[in-house]
Amino acid sequence: MASDGDIRVLLALDLLLSLAFSAVALWGLSFFGLIRNTTTNLVLATLVVATLTYLLVLR
Image (cartoon, rainbow, N blue to C red; front, top):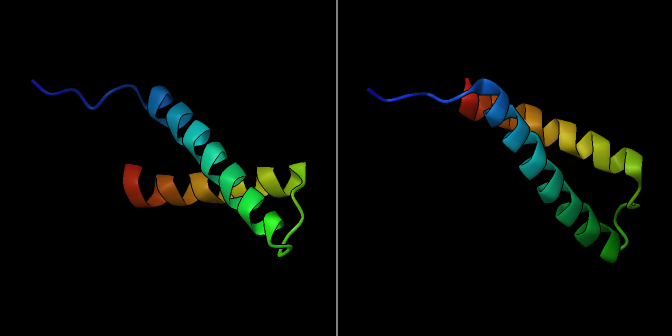
């Protein structure tokens, strides 16, 4: 019998990996001067990536 896993663990991993991806992406964009690397931009990028991941993969 296969288990889907606990949704809380999946959401926590989604947020953690989205944060890491957003941090690297923002660092790269700020390195080239395309966007400022601020906490607000990091939070917004993380929420966007996490939401897209949830809608496209977890649903």
